[in-house]
Length: 76
Ligand SMILES: [Zn+2]
Image 1 (cartoon, rainbow, N blue to C red):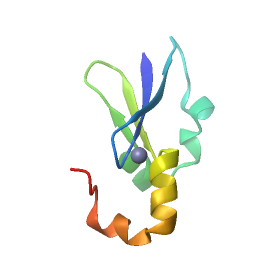
Image 2: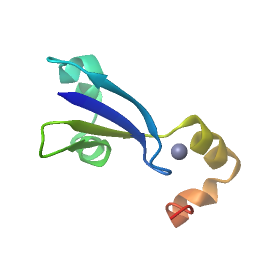
Image 3: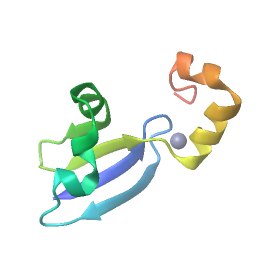
Image 4: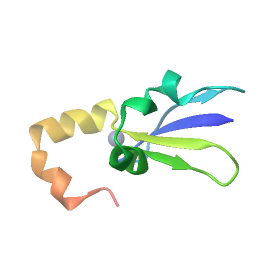
């Protein structure tokens, strides 16, 4: 299986893990609430996992412009 990390805002691929056996504990998913899990983690039909995070660029942009959060993705 592959675990793909993408930015939730600009959809940039941040990285991916290719591993035969990675547990949710190793990924830190077990510490998330059910709401956070469904928001952050998507299970693809091919068995891959997509994890939505925030890249450095968007993190900085949101720090200086918190209102961007309210308009969704300004790049789309
Ligand atoms: Zn981003």
